[in-house]
Length: 140
Image 1 (cartoon, rainbow, N blue to C red):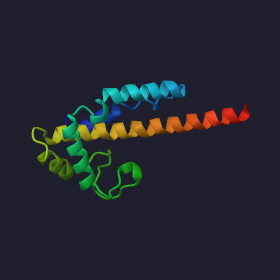
Image 2: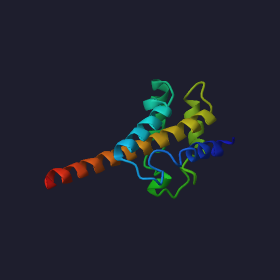
Image 3: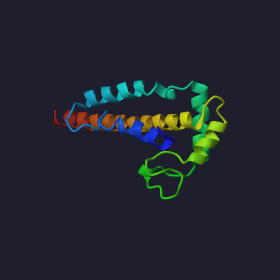
């Protein structure tokens, strides 16, 4: 797979996961699906050693500071249409991670992006559950 198709393939694999399915599920079942996928992604460090992941996150933050991802309305060239980071950013990050090439950095970036989306979905589920619980308590 080419570098741009790698991220697309990774994202396409998750189209029907977690909250993307059309069948209604309980919030607990949705949360469990999210937790399972987070585990599959490799946990907090998305499968990398903690120190490598920390370097990746630091560099991503520095190199993408003030830039928006496609979901946030990016219009410049920091991210491609498929949401992946531009090759020059990936290359700069790979230079700082001995033993990691651009393809590995791009795959990790896709996992991190998916992890962040899942965490956002989990926060939304928890917020919705709290609102429902408050409504139930008020009606009791």
